[in-house]
Length: 109
View (cartoon, rainbow, N blue to C red):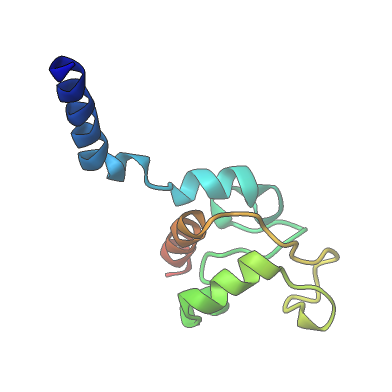
C-alpha cells in the first residue's frame, strides 16, 4: 500500500513540475484555428488581415484582443470592411487565447 502511495506522490510531483510543458502553444493553436483565414504565420490572405505590423494588435490591450477572439466581429463591429467574411467567434479557453495573443503580438512588432 505504501508503495502505491509513494508512486502516486511521485507522479503528482512530476505533473506539478512539468506543467509548463502542457502550456498552450500560440503558434500551434493559430495554425489549427486561425491560419485558414489569416494565412500561415499571420501573413494575411484574401479572407482576413495580416497580423504582421497590424496596428490594432500592436496598440490594443490583451483584454480587447481577447474579446475579438471570443466574440468575433460582425456587422457594424467589423473593423476590416474590405474582407467579405466577418470574424467568427472562437471557442478557445483562456490559456489558449492568451497564447494566441502572445503570438499575435510577436508578429505585430
